[in-house]
Amino acid sequence: MPAVEVNGTKINYLQLDSDAGPDAEHLVMVHGLATNMAFWYIRHAPEFAKRYKVTLFDLRGHGRSRVTENGYTPANMATDMLGLLDHLEIPKAHVIAHSFGGVVALNFACSAPERVESLMLIDSHISAIRKLEKVEGWDYGDKLQVLLHDQGIDINVREPYFGYRLLAEVALLQEQKVDISPELKEIVTPIVGNYGNRTAKLWLKLLNTTAAEKELMGDDGLALDMLKQLKFPILAVYGEYSQSMLTGRHLLEVWPHADFRKMLRAGHFFPTTRPEELISTCEQFWHGAMVSGVSTRDGDKKRHFRSERFSQRDDGWYFSTRDGEEGPFETVEEAQDMLSFYITQAKDSKVAQA
Image 1 (tube, helix red, strand yellow):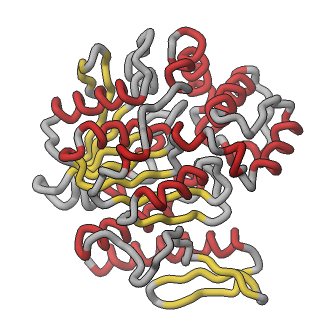
Image 2 (cartoon, rainbow, N blue to C red; image 1 turned 30 degrees about the vertical axis):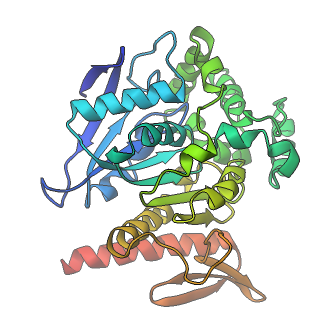
């Protein structure tokens, strides 16, 4: 697998050629903390490569990129990203980024907006909003607090950097081979997945032997006034149950031109638990934003999240498609499973007709 020396470190990367040919536009995918490029590689990248030339890379200190003593601030990681794109001679790209990867991508975009074609921000939380949590609260936090207590994890979910601390605690449990409850597993999928043991060890090593913890939990350098200057098409997708939803609600007023989507009954790692829905949402955005301009709702004075895929009525749950509405289903989970099946069937049908 190729790597490049940039900004004082080695960055591991991978490129997928596009089915659309050598003139296809570029898409750069950025993972979050305690994961690596595999977060995007298996389920998402092959689908996106049908349209774009896809570039994946491991953040500094993650995957097969070099672990350095310091340099883990979002601004410095954005410099890593810029160096990689320069090396690969990518002048401009669409960017999709999850969690902390979104913080890196936003730093990159603020420093070099001319290099960004569009941005898909997936459940990212920024420090300018974290301090507001004690005032505004987090609806799902009380339920999650009980799950953590039952697991023996002593973390207050109202802490500003709760998510980072949770990853560390779960990584420690994984290394000690302690069973994780199914409910908690769903929240921290990347840590306890197929490659959880190795990922857990790398994450703990990063926190214990470098300046990563201090630098990651410091100010990320993103001021709301800076973000207001970003004018390229933006899709922001947040999980209904995620702590990051607070950031999403504030960004509604920062980006009046952006498309905001809410993934119903989803936590922070919904890209891995519900990939087909995210892929479909991104494809809708690319089509709308690139063909008709940035997607907005006519006549709306107040900004809001769209979540029209699923709806609940007295007789059960429904999901909507371009062909109409399907349902009722007894639970939203059943509706989600059927929507995923519908999307897969529709894609298979297109391939058969091609």
